Amino acid sequence: QIIILRPTRRLARSRTNRCAVAPFGIYPRAPHVPLLRPRPSPASLSQQRQQQHLACSVSKTAAMTPPPAAPATPNAAHHASDAGNGCGCGSTGLEAKFNGLLSNNKTWAAEQVAKDPTYFSRLQAQQAPEYLWIGCADSRVPANQVVGLAPGEVFVQRNVGNQAMHTDMNVMACLEYAVTALKVKVIICCGHYGCGAVKGALSLPSKTQGLVNCWISDIRECRNQHHAELKALPTQEERTDRLCELNVIRQTFHVCTSPVVQKAWDEGQDLVVFGAIYSLKDGIMKKLVGPLTRENACHDIFEFEHKATGQTGMGASPLNMSRAMSLNAGPKPEGKAATADDDERASAVNTAVLASRVFEHTNWDAPKVA
Image 1 (tube, rainbow, N blue to C red):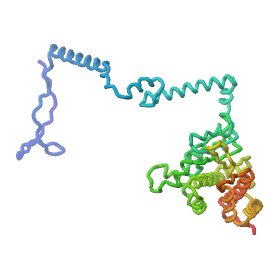
Image 2: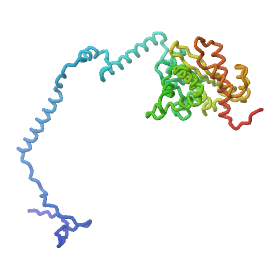
Image 3: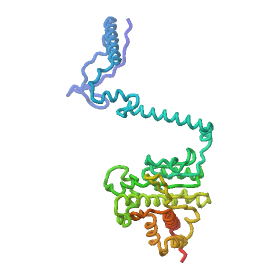
Image 4: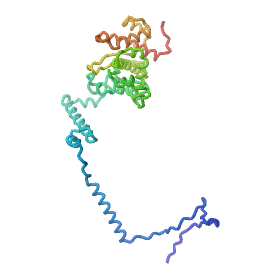
């Protein structure tokens, strides 16, 4: 016989409470647990395996069995008949809608190739748009279709309320890429009448929770700056439309005073900025301000005030210029439609005022010429 001796560690016992004294403290002795467990017999092992196999078979059968049919509901026939067309009720209908979009895409791609076999190869080879469009995310104002341009001819940035704040990294990154990398020549800030973001700035309480309320804070600030003018308008629709115009002018100002555009103008890059507004009623886009270039945005303020004086017949003070802009660009009295000359005059005044403000913003410490 071979006797194997295993080293053991004896623990001293306290005479007072008969506890095991361990190096890290005193604790009661654990009950005796046998070190070796009796090995199961081959018959019991075989029985356990058979039970496990049976349980596994039962679970697989249950998984393959379809669930019982749900009781008929009034909409059951609706779901069954529109399952292939996508009724929009549940994930199946929404997936069918998406599949319909994929089908439309294939049809459109085939039509483009039929018209021009090199259409996609030319788009893939180069992106060289001349225009940057900063517009509203409203689904009714698609940039390409509104101005009649094909894909690849306009670089698009859209957000709620067609805003171009300097703190919005999305807009500023898009602006930087368009100006420095793509070398666009024209930037268009375009809003539209009846904008939901503008309506919210007029009616949504400031304490309303949510990100949208924070997002439209710049439009609300524009509302506050023109409080008297907006309050003088008789209807809410007229106030909304006028604030839509003022918001476009404000966002155009943000674009012109952005570091990206200022640097491009300083380097002599050929770049011009416009502000425009689109009407959902007739699909016509109207120029509100522009062209704004390095030349007219960096000359002396009084030169632009003089230019505005010739357009309005008013004094050359900034207050009169702002009043002229409001009178010419605002809604016309009932029964008097705006003419092309009115729109052109309003655009010229807006351009002069905005150019002066851009100069003041970027050259605030420059001495004025008397």
